[in-house]
Image 1: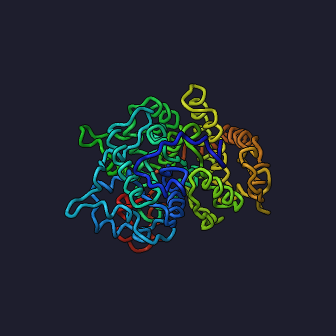
Image 2: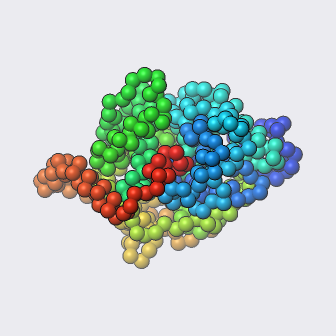
Amino acid sequence: MRPIRGAGRAARHTSPDLHLSDLMTSKCQAVFLHTGYRTAGTWLWSCFRKLDTVTAYYEPLHEMLATIDQEKLATSTADSWRSGHPALEAPYFAEYAHLLEPGVKGIPGYEAAFSVDRFDRQVPERAGRIEAYVRGLMRAAHEQGRVPVLKFCRSLGRLEWFRTTFPDAVHIVVEKNPISQWQSCWHLFAAYRNPHFVAVPFAVLALNRDVPVVQQTMSALGVELPPLPDGAVAQTMESYLTLFKDHVAAITPLQVYRAFLAHWLLTLRDTAKHANAIFDCDLAAHSPAYLEGAERWIGELTGIHPSLRSARREEASERGNGFDAVEGLQVHLEALQVARALAASGGAEADTLTFWTSKLAQATQTMAFGAAANWPQPQVGAGHATRVVDVALIDGAGIDDVLLGELASTRAALAEVKSELTRVQNAPLWRLIRYVRKLRAPKMFRRARRGARRHVGASPPTSARHSSKRAQ
């Protein structure tokens, strides 16, 4: 795993569209932030956006860009739905405003098909058009004398293609442990009836269901897709999201999390090999030393120097998972088996397996002991720490208590909890409980949903109910 710094920088090629002044102040022609849903990627992007030398494009592959107009652009803000995003001085897509043509909806050059991520490691469909569209955004920024920073949320499955096609950009993957991501997605669904982020993994998996590695991962994690519509018209992200928003409301949270975890594994499969760097938002939320080191290596890689001091510390109070920790642990162990199988077959790099293992371990601890369990605190014993960071990768950064706790954590933690799970699962009482839970799960889920609605009170505003039209 490379939580502090990623692979070496790709070869740089000078574009005639890049002004001389840009070349003097920046080491790259663009920065691509490849993020997952609800990873705090919007916060990192906003740090770049504050710089006068940057044009920061939000979600260049978002399906909303196919039909956006000036009115929709102006109303798509961090305050127009329960985003949890930092306060933004302008709407998400403000940087696209000058590209809109009067009376015409959609950003020129964008096609809705661009939004579908792929996991087959092949040249994506419409690759030439995607490249032309993205380079058009880059060129628009260069003409303003600025460096483009593009924050993607639908690119991780195509990371190899992006790295190869845009070697003149620095590619930074923004990552977070899966249970923290899930809790953010699930909270929006359970508390505010926003199913978008828990439906997305199903939609992406369904649109990739012909890919062998996707079939393998779904089978191993017990992910089942409902009957899918036929016909080319149905093969769109929007139509699949509509289908799966209904589907996630009819199954248990644990079943939804299985699909979420399958999607998480697949999106990060090429990170170790094709990212220039990895930004760890889990560490960023707890470690000032990590933030200081990240500011340094971002500057060295890109020539751009955003301040990261606005990072928000995660609160110890825990959002719900929708299922208990023992059930979640079982799924994490299954995911770990999938990860090992992919690495053994050549479907993933050894570094990726280390990365997956570390993040699954951290997710297990967070799920069992709370958001702050992985970080040194008086009430949390040292034996509860699970993540391992190679000190050689810190590049001489300062070591604070958080990073020291990371370095001192034990690799035996997963083996210990696996042994405990085996003991519990072999007990007759556990088998009876599991059977009863299976029978009662749909009823319990409906009851939890009703409770969440009573807690929230009045219905949320329309913008919250239709957040598929909002950015991540």
